[in-house]
Image (cartoon, rainbow, N blue to C red):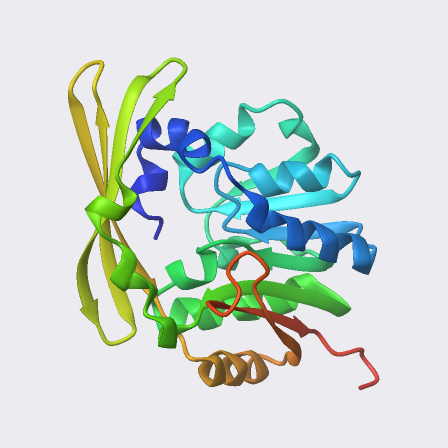
Length: 245
């Protein structure tokens, strides 16, 4: 189930401006280049930023996301016809055989239901060619990133073409075991509309993630430090074994 920040059309329309620094995608681009990937499945494609970057490089991309408002934004971008967009979750994919499956940013953590997480991993496995790679990131729970999610630390004002002056901030709501819930608030000062979107992330331990990958048939090839958040996130690379392995 998609977060409210991606399902509301007005919020989806300004998401790219509010999240304009996407340098976090650079390592994924480099990995696609290193692997020589020609077909990529992007799970949780959102507004299509990463999928379109791949398409610009001549890569065949399938982007899937349950948030129709976000995918509508992606479909409206220049070059969007080069990507195959699918509304839904990974369990609703057609038969695919790709070289690389990606879940960038918060996508892996946003899949909070254990059954849905296992289904997503299995769907990624089934979509990969033998020898293909799944890559995704997740925050290290030991760093307790949620302690920094405060209004005073996140408050900002952004001037957005077509929307005017927009005020935004996030605030922590609840921490229950591995589940952390926070609220994003967006105020459109032009007309006074205030929209809130609650989001929940699951903070998984490294050993837990590795065990779940193995249970779905993957080989865990590497667990790296996230270049954009050193010491704060794990980046998992797991492969579908070759047929004779």
